[in-house]
Image 1 (spheres, one colour):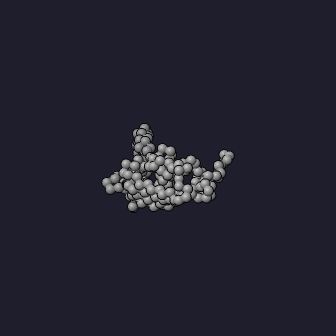
Image 2 (cartoon, rainbow, N blue to C red; image 1 turned 90 degrees about the vertical axis):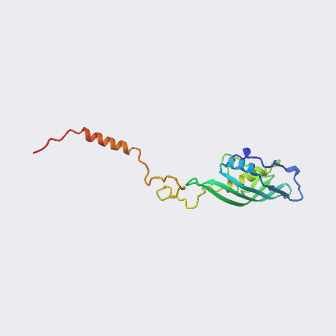
Image 3 (cartoon, helix red, strand yellow; image 1 turned 180 degrees about the horizontal axis):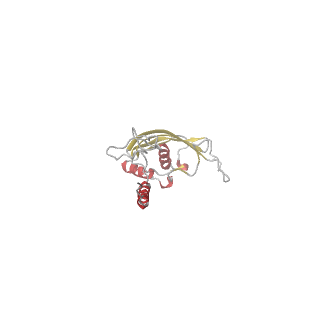
Length: 196
Protein backbone atom coordinates (compact mmCIF):
# COMPACT_ATOMS: atom_id res chain seq x y z
CA UNK A 1 0.00 0.00 0.00
CA UNK A 2 1.50 3.36 -0.94
CA UNK A 3 2.16 6.05 1.65
CA UNK A 4 -0.91 8.28 1.22
CA UNK A 5 0.84 11.21 2.90
CA UNK A 6 2.83 11.61 -0.34
CA UNK A 7 -0.20 11.12 -2.62
CA UNK A 8 -1.17 13.85 -5.11
CA UNK A 9 -3.56 16.34 -3.49
CA UNK A 10 -6.91 16.56 -5.31
CA UNK A 11 -8.71 18.72 -2.73
CA UNK A 12 -7.74 20.09 0.65
CA UNK A 13 -8.68 17.99 3.70
CA UNK A 14 -12.11 18.82 5.10
CA UNK A 15 -12.18 20.45 8.54
CA UNK A 16 -14.69 18.50 10.61
CA UNK A 17 -15.64 21.62 12.54
CA UNK A 18 -16.75 23.31 9.29
CA UNK A 19 -18.86 20.43 7.93
CA UNK A 20 -22.62 20.85 7.77
CA UNK A 21 -23.87 18.82 10.73
CA UNK A 22 -27.57 18.81 9.73
CA UNK A 23 -27.40 17.89 6.05
CA UNK A 24 -25.31 15.67 3.75
CA UNK A 25 -22.02 17.08 2.47
CA UNK A 26 -21.62 16.29 -1.24
CA UNK A 27 -18.27 14.94 -2.45
CA UNK A 28 -17.28 15.04 -6.13
CA UNK A 29 -13.73 14.45 -7.36
CA UNK A 30 -13.02 14.36 -11.11
CA UNK A 31 -9.31 15.10 -11.60
CA UNK A 32 -8.06 16.45 -14.93
CA UNK A 33 -5.54 14.68 -17.20
CA UNK A 34 -2.51 16.11 -15.39
CA UNK A 35 -3.81 15.00 -11.98
CA UNK A 36 -4.66 11.55 -13.37
CA UNK A 37 -1.09 11.25 -14.72
CA UNK A 38 0.28 12.20 -11.27
CA UNK A 39 -1.92 9.56 -9.60
CA UNK A 40 -0.84 6.91 -12.14
CA UNK A 41 2.80 7.74 -11.48
CA UNK A 42 2.23 7.62 -7.71
CA UNK A 43 0.50 4.21 -7.95
CA UNK A 44 3.10 2.82 -10.38
CA UNK A 45 0.63 2.04 -13.16
CA UNK A 46 0.91 2.85 -16.87
CA UNK A 47 -2.04 5.25 -17.07
CA UNK A 48 -5.20 6.43 -15.35
CA UNK A 49 -7.59 7.38 -18.15
CA UNK A 50 -10.64 8.26 -16.05
CA UNK A 51 -11.20 8.76 -12.34
CA UNK A 52 -14.33 9.84 -10.49
CA UNK A 53 -15.07 9.69 -6.79
CA UNK A 54 -18.52 10.93 -5.84
CA UNK A 55 -20.54 10.47 -2.69
CA UNK A 56 -22.00 11.88 0.48
CA UNK A 57 -20.38 12.57 3.84
CA UNK A 58 -23.04 12.78 6.53
CA UNK A 59 -23.16 12.92 10.31
CA UNK A 60 -23.78 9.66 12.13
CA UNK A 61 -24.97 9.98 15.72
CA UNK A 62 -23.73 12.91 17.78
CA UNK A 63 -20.07 13.03 16.77
CA UNK A 64 -19.31 10.39 14.13
CA UNK A 65 -19.36 10.67 10.32
CA UNK A 66 -20.03 8.25 7.50
CA UNK A 67 -18.87 8.46 3.88
CA UNK A 68 -20.60 6.52 1.11
CA UNK A 69 -19.07 7.01 -2.31
CA UNK A 70 -18.82 5.50 -5.77
CA UNK A 71 -15.38 5.04 -7.28
CA UNK A 72 -15.13 4.78 -11.06
CA UNK A 73 -11.84 4.51 -12.92
CA UNK A 74 -10.24 3.22 -16.10
CA UNK A 75 -6.66 2.07 -15.50
CA UNK A 76 -3.89 0.72 -17.71
CA UNK A 77 -1.35 -1.68 -16.20
CA UNK A 78 1.37 -3.97 -17.52
CA UNK A 79 0.29 -7.59 -17.97
CA UNK A 80 1.82 -9.70 -15.20
CA UNK A 81 2.84 -12.33 -17.78
CA UNK A 82 3.72 -10.53 -21.02
CA UNK A 83 4.05 -6.86 -19.99
CA UNK A 84 1.52 -5.94 -22.69
CA UNK A 85 -0.82 -3.07 -21.66
CA UNK A 86 -4.03 -4.21 -19.93
CA UNK A 87 -6.99 -1.83 -19.58
CA UNK A 88 -9.36 -2.43 -16.66
CA UNK A 89 -12.59 -0.68 -15.71
CA UNK A 90 -13.07 -0.33 -11.95
CA UNK A 91 -16.43 0.38 -10.31
CA UNK A 92 -16.45 0.15 -6.53
CA UNK A 93 -18.62 1.32 -3.67
CA UNK A 94 -16.62 2.81 -0.82
CA UNK A 95 -17.85 3.12 2.76
CA UNK A 96 -15.90 4.69 5.61
CA UNK A 97 -17.01 5.49 9.15
CA UNK A 98 -15.08 8.08 11.14
CA UNK A 99 -15.52 7.43 14.85
CA UNK A 100 -14.79 10.05 17.50
CA UNK A 101 -14.37 7.48 20.29
CA UNK A 102 -12.71 4.65 18.38
CA UNK A 103 -10.63 2.60 20.86
CA UNK A 104 -6.90 2.71 20.23
CA UNK A 105 -5.01 -0.62 20.08
CA UNK A 106 -2.77 -1.41 23.05
CA UNK A 107 0.19 -3.72 23.42
CA UNK A 108 2.46 -5.30 20.82
CA UNK A 109 -0.10 -7.64 19.29
CA UNK A 110 -2.92 -5.87 17.49
CA UNK A 111 -6.02 -7.71 16.29
CA UNK A 112 -7.65 -6.63 13.06
CA UNK A 113 -10.98 -4.93 13.81
CA UNK A 114 -14.14 -6.68 12.63
CA UNK A 115 -15.34 -3.46 10.97
CA UNK A 116 -12.67 -2.58 8.41
CA UNK A 117 -14.60 0.52 7.34
CA UNK A 118 -14.03 2.29 10.68
CA UNK A 119 -11.30 4.88 11.21
CA UNK A 120 -10.58 7.25 14.09
CA UNK A 121 -12.01 10.73 13.57
CA UNK A 122 -9.46 13.52 13.69
CA UNK A 123 -9.75 17.25 13.12
CA UNK A 124 -9.79 16.68 9.33
CA UNK A 125 -11.07 14.11 6.85
CA UNK A 126 -8.71 13.71 3.89
CA UNK A 127 -11.05 12.76 1.05
CA UNK A 128 -8.26 13.03 -1.52
CA UNK A 129 -6.03 10.48 0.21
CA UNK A 130 -9.03 8.26 0.91
CA UNK A 131 -10.09 8.23 -2.77
CA UNK A 132 -6.58 7.36 -3.97
CA UNK A 133 -6.25 4.66 -1.32
CA UNK A 134 -9.58 3.16 -2.45
CA UNK A 135 -8.30 3.12 -6.04
CA UNK A 136 -5.04 1.45 -4.98
CA UNK A 137 -7.00 -1.27 -3.14
CA UNK A 138 -9.23 -1.86 -6.18
CA UNK A 139 -6.39 -2.29 -8.69
CA UNK A 140 -6.00 -5.82 -10.08
CA UNK A 141 -3.02 -7.44 -8.35
CA UNK A 142 -2.05 -9.54 -11.39
CA UNK A 143 -3.54 -8.03 -14.57
CA UNK A 144 -3.54 -10.44 -17.52
CA UNK A 145 -3.73 -9.65 -21.22
CA UNK A 146 -6.26 -11.77 -23.19
CA UNK A 147 -4.75 -15.21 -23.83
CA UNK A 148 -1.73 -14.63 -21.59
CA UNK A 149 -1.16 -17.71 -19.49
CA UNK A 150 1.68 -19.54 -17.84
CA UNK A 151 2.25 -23.06 -19.11
CA UNK A 152 2.56 -25.89 -16.55
CA UNK A 153 6.37 -25.55 -16.81
CA UNK A 154 6.09 -21.89 -15.79
CA UNK A 155 7.00 -20.51 -19.19
CA UNK A 156 4.98 -17.84 -20.95
CA UNK A 157 2.42 -19.44 -23.25
CA UNK A 158 1.61 -16.20 -25.05
CA UNK A 159 3.92 -13.31 -25.91
CA UNK A 160 3.41 -9.97 -27.66
CA UNK A 161 3.68 -10.04 -31.43
CA UNK A 162 7.31 -9.91 -32.57
CA UNK A 163 8.71 -10.99 -29.20
CA UNK A 164 11.27 -13.79 -29.01
CA UNK A 165 9.69 -16.76 -27.24
CA UNK A 166 11.40 -18.18 -24.18
CA UNK A 167 13.05 -21.61 -24.58
CA UNK A 168 11.00 -24.68 -23.72
CA UNK A 169 13.58 -25.84 -21.18
CA UNK A 170 15.47 -23.52 -18.85
CA UNK A 171 19.06 -22.70 -19.86
CA UNK A 172 21.81 -24.76 -18.20
CA UNK A 173 24.72 -22.39 -17.57
CA UNK A 174 27.23 -25.17 -16.73
CA UNK A 175 26.46 -27.41 -19.71
CA UNK A 176 29.27 -25.83 -21.79
CA UNK A 177 31.77 -26.36 -18.95
CA UNK A 178 30.69 -29.97 -18.59
CA UNK A 179 31.24 -30.52 -22.34
CA UNK A 180 34.68 -28.87 -22.15
CA UNK A 181 35.66 -31.00 -19.18
CA UNK A 182 34.59 -34.14 -21.03
CA UNK A 183 36.64 -33.14 -24.10
CA UNK A 184 39.74 -32.47 -22.01
CA UNK A 185 39.39 -35.77 -20.20
CA UNK A 186 39.11 -37.62 -23.53
CA UNK A 187 42.22 -35.86 -24.86
CA UNK A 188 44.29 -36.59 -21.76
CA UNK A 189 43.76 -40.37 -21.80
CA UNK A 190 46.83 -42.33 -22.94
CA UNK A 191 46.46 -43.93 -26.35
CA UNK A 192 45.50 -47.61 -26.31
CA UNK A 193 47.96 -50.16 -27.66
CA UNK A 194 46.75 -52.02 -30.69
CA UNK A 195 46.12 -55.55 -29.75
CA UNK A 196 46.78 -58.12 -32.42
